Structures are given as C-alpha cells and as structure tokens.
Image (tube, rainbow, N blue to C red; front, side, top):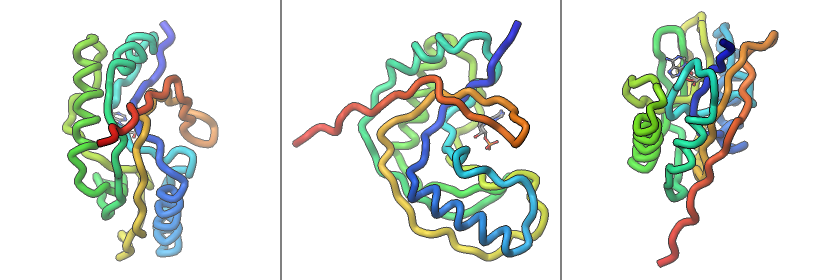
Amino acid sequence: METMRLFIAVDLSESMKAALIEAQNEMYDGGVRGSYTREENLHLTLAFIGEMPDAEPALEALSGVSFTPFELSLEGLGCFGDLWWAGMRASPALEALARRVRRALADSGVPFDRKRFSPHVTLLRKARGPMPGIRIGEASMTVDAFSLLRSDRGKGGMIYTELGRFPAAPAREN
Ligand code: 2AM
C-alpha cells in the first residue's frame, strides 16, 4: 500500500527565515559543511506522524484544535549530534499548542512520535566542522496557524507539501 510521511509544523515568517539564513551563511563562511535546510523548508515541527496510508484522519483530528495567536522568538543554537538547530525562547503558548495537537491525534487514534516536544528549527544535517561562535539574530513572529505537511524525498532534497492549514481563532478583545 502506498503511504505518505506526515508531520505537523508551524511555517516561519519571512523575517524569521531571514535570520536563520543569515546564521546558516555565517556557519558556511565559518567552514561548516553539510546538508543545509533550504529556506522554503525551514519550519518548526509540533508532532511527527510518519508513514500513513491516508491524511484524512489527521486532517479531521487537527480541525478540532483551537488556539489563539501567540508570539514566538528565536533563541540560541544547539545540536543533536550532527544535526544543528536554532531554538525558540521558552513559550508556554507553544508548549500548549503542541500538547493540543498531540492530544487531538491521540484522541483520534492517529499514531505519532511520542518523544518529548523539543522546539527547534533544523538548520543543517550531517554537519562537519566545529560550531562557530555565532549569535543568532533577534527575530520574532506571530504564530497564527499550523499545518499538516507531507514530506517526500526529491532529487534536490526534501519536498514539503501542505495538505491542510489550521488557523488560530481570532484573539479575544477585552
Ligand atoms: P528534525 O528536523 O529534528 O529531523 C520532518 O521530518 C520533520 O519531522 C522534521 O522537522 C523532523 O525533525 C521532525 N521529526 C520529529 N520526529 C521525527 C522522527 N521520528 N523521524 C523523522 N522526523 C521527525
């Protein structure tokens, strides 16, 4: 049976992507080689589902997730082995969104990777070279939607296709 690889992520603003690209450029200029994430692929994963025959159950589950827009800011760089990432400033609203997404999947019987949520944007895989002492630029954005994405291996790297977009409810006026 044909399956597709699914995950749920927040798309990043142009200004946040610009700060991340600048950090990648500094890494490259510092002599670091590896597989750099292309600009259009930079994202923040909330949950990883993996191979599924059908996206419908996930789309259905996610349509029930509600949240209000919130701010997200870049903070720091780190690595998991040779995978280098940019982090996000601690955000209870982001944690809450990831929790809601994961609970909605679990309640609908959609399997997903239960690893603890560790908010990061992958900048580079298979990194070779010492991490240069760079500081990532200030960048913030408002999260007003998240997406269900499909991941396919293309000739020039991964291709991510949005299968569904789930906007925030408008912030309540006081
Ligand atoms: P990564 O960038 O740290 O590898 C698509 O693969 C997205 O899902 C990536 O952001 C990836 O994170 C994330 N992801 C989370 N858990 C994963 C897993 N078990 N296998 C593959 N990707 C995973």
